[in-house]
Every structure is written in structure tokens, then in C-alpha cells.
Amino acid sequence: MTERTARLTHEVTLGLASVTSERFPFVLKSAAFMAVVGVLLYVSLAAAYPPVHDAMHDFRHALAIVPCH
Amino acid sequence: MSYGHESRNPAFGALLFLVSLVLMFASLPSPLAAQVEHIKVQVSPDTTLLRPLKDSARITIDVDGSAETIRGPVQLSVRLTAPASGAIVSSDFPLIEETRLIDMTVANVTGSLSWDYIFPIRGEYRLDVSATDQQGRRLERSFTLRVHENRAKVAFLIGFIAALFLLGLVAGRVFSAPAGVAAIFMALVVYGAGPDQGLGADTGRGAALEGELTVAPPRVGTPSIIRWRGTEPGSGKPVRATVTLRVVQLEKGKEVFALHRVPTDGTLDVAFQFTDASPHRVVAMATTRDRQGATEVARTVEVESATPPLGIRVWPVMLFLLVVLAGLAAGRFSKKRPVRLPWIGKQVKMDPKEAS
Image (cartoon, one colour):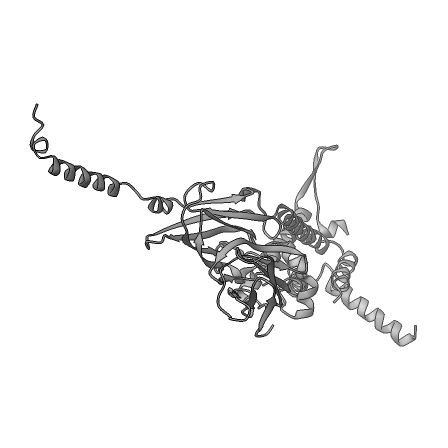
């Protein structure tokens, strides 16, 4: 690992730590978390993009309330 | 002894007797009229035992109330309509909700008509039956058939909701904890997620008759016309035949619809909705009384699918997000709440800053 890569990794870790620190409001952290979960749920359960739809087809039907077609 | 006018005039008495006899028979219901006074529907096994896309049911329509008694022919019209959408969420097949699944008119039905069918979704189906006898008298009845959801799917849904709540709960507690733990959790969430056309006709040639099977381009949400024609080889005249029609979903090898031994005048039209967007095989087998052997024609069709509107697709995602949000709130609340320790009998206030 070069010195530059090591410095970059250190800065990213510091940034992530500051964002998730207790100083950062709980509401903002929760909002970010909900956004991530929302995107994941939408892509896996509601996206009409054929490759995603085909991959998640059985899972969607197994949940009984997720519209598939 | 005098019994009045008739005793004095035997010819008039005989005439009166004949007239009263005719009137008496006229007032009695004819066998044909009795035939369409009752329409009975039997589902086997019982609808409470049926599960969507799993169990095949035999539906029998009995036009005189007793399948054992075979009477004169009637024309039966059968329409099966899919259940309506739920109050909050739809089924996994929203495009077929409240649409026509089967629509067929079969002439010359004697006694009963039966077919096998796999119900595609949960809910209350409506079966409209209309029977018309040879005198043109018509009787209509509507029946409701309730099919419950598959228990395995319900269990899976409950498990999924519990997992989402647990995820929210853990997030709520972690976000109330020191920075290091929250950083690891967020990293886990982010990195752990990772990233037929117009159909022609198929003709089967056999010794008995020439069968032709046509299937209109199938599409989920609208019924397709399945048309069978039986003609005499050479002359091309329609041939009376008994037809068995089957629809098989090829991916799972399940027979989703089977109409058994329907008498026809050489034509059978059934409007059938293909509810699954996958290849299906439609098979028609015809036999005639006069000729030996059976003629089988088959077609394999691709079913075109469509995507439900965004408004319908987004609802379950919103509900699942609410579950995660509830878990998040519960996690935060549980972290802040005073916890009573039973072994020391004191309340200890759990605060994130104190915990760190």
C-alpha cells in the first residue's frame, strides 16, 4: 500500500467516523440509514429493470404482497 | 243417481276429462324446465383447503342439482372473475385483479360440466353461471369462491417483517452508541448490500378428424381466446366431437387448467387468462363417436407480461420502510429508557454518552 493510498484510507475512515459519531445528530444518521434501506428495498422489490426483476422474481412472489405482474 | 250435466252427455264428459288432463300436464314442470331450476357448484377439494398457485381444484357445475341424473342438453356460460385488490396491499398479481379469468360457453351440456383449475391469487372469486335450455329459458346464478393465502408465504412475510424490524432496532441502538460502533454498522449496511407475437394456427392431422388450435397472443391481465376447430378431412365440414382442453405451465410443469370431455359441434371457444408470464402449452384432444382414434393438437405460447403501475409497486416498499422506522424508534427508545436491574433492585439510566 502506497503512502498516498494509506492517507486516503485514513481520511475516508475519519470522515465516516465523524459522520457516525455521537456529535452528529441521531436524526441525520437515521435519515441516511433509511435512505440506504429504502433504495435497497425499492431496487429489490419494486424495480422493473428486467435483470433485477428476474433475479428477485421468486423472492417477490414469496412475500405475497409485493406486486410482480 | 245424477252427477250433473256430464252424466247426461257422455261425449261432453269425455271431452271435459281430456281438457282437464291436458291442463293438469301443462301445469306440471317439464323435465327441461326442472333442469335449469337448479345450478349447483362443487369445488373439490374444499376452497378452505386450496392454496393459490399450488393446489388444483376440480370445479363442477351441475345444472339439475344432481350429477347422477343426466337430462337433455343445455347451453352453459361460465365466467370466472378474479378477486379485488386488498384494502392496503394488493396480491403479487395486481394486473389480474378483478379481471376475467375464464369465459366460456359450452353447448349441449348434459348434467354437469367440470374443469380443473389452479387459482392464481388469494381472495374471493366470482363465478357467474348461466344455463339456457332448448326452449330458450335461461337461469343465471352467481357464486363466490374464497381462496386463502399460502401459509408458507404468510410465514415468510412475517419473518421478513420481523427481520426488518430487528434491523431498525439494531440501527437505533447502534446510532445511540459511540462513534466506532456506528461507523462499523453503517459500513456493513452500505458494503454488505452490494449491488409471442401473433400466433398462427397449429393443425393436427389424424384419422378421425382434422383439428385446428389457435391461441390469441396471451398477455397477463387480459383473457386470450383459445379456439379449437374440428373439420372433416377433405371436405372441411365441421365435425361433432368431444374435446378435452389442457393448459400446462411449462416452467413448473403444472396443469393450470383442464376442461374435460366437452361436447362440441366442431367448435370450442374458451377465453382464458394466462396469469403467469412464462411459456405455456395448450393441448386439445378430440374424439368423435363415429370415427375411431383421437386427434391431438398442441401449441406452445409465450405469455407477455407487463409491469404494474408505480403507485401499486411502491406501497409494499413504504410499508416495509415503516417497519424499519418503527424498529429504529424502538432501538433509540430502548437505549434511553431506564433499565431496572432485578438483582440490585435499582434503576440505571442508560445513556449513550455514559455508555461511551
